[in-house]
Image (cartoon, rainbow, N blue to C red; front, side, top):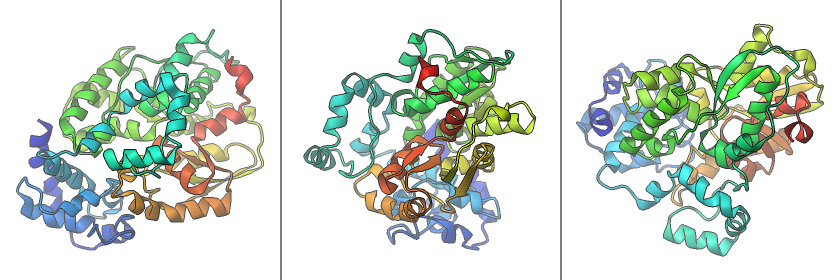
Length: 415
């Protein structure tokens, strides 16, 4: 169904609105980093007129899927969506084994957690990474997450009790942690739950699987469709009217935007979950704007913080709530990166043939962070944090972790 949709998508109808202004070309981070990608206009609306359901030019695969082209297009052309659908058609007959392996994010987390110290040691060894590059096709220097000895769900189920709140109960709310938030960026998920509980929410974390984003971005539409439908059912289990919070900005975007706009999933449950899904920074800033967040509880910090908003958060059209959220903390000044992309684009920057491109895309961002605060930066998505950490040397946190620190919710509160 999804491949058929990709071949005959209504996104094609938007291509006739293209006036060849080349704004998408000037803003594309990949086109400015390599001549191997001729630009979003060429492989998008221009080439789409000739495809007739088939792929025309394999340079299309150098598109990172950042969606900046769609975001900046003044005519509303669905450039990124057209390109993603064309990539799925292109790969339908030949999908590299590497692209199938690196999209199994939940399986990777389950396999690595029991052997986390050994896995982390192995991934730090250059000879082992060189073998992986030669055999699998993942670049030996690509950023990889650190496995943890305890998953988020393991922590959530085994802790003695929810964090006590000084405030009246606000009722139940659902938390969606995503694969990386469940197995690798566990601290972000813990911080999210504790902040929500401090505010008086009863946090419900239903059993949940992968959203399928990695598969979608690699053209595996059929597998991604199954995963996102199953996830929508799981997230609806606690109640079909409850707000769903996620600190995984990219996974939230899959349910809010990409499942429908790119893969054509017309499913009431997926649509309902997407409509109820809110990114954490967006949710908390709304509470602040309504006077429902205890800003007086935030402890002052003397901090200038570089912040980068990931592409998949930009494409959701929410503005930049993380900036106002973090600057609610007295003494915090946030400097927005001014850069379009960090380069990783999910799994794009892991691939041996695209690694150097990804690094050139991210270099201006790395330089900006080193010049602003080489110790600490903020960003909403997990793979972007891995890329920025490796490229800049700074520790990179989700904005919720700064709020968590400012509220004084440290190790003592978590025990």
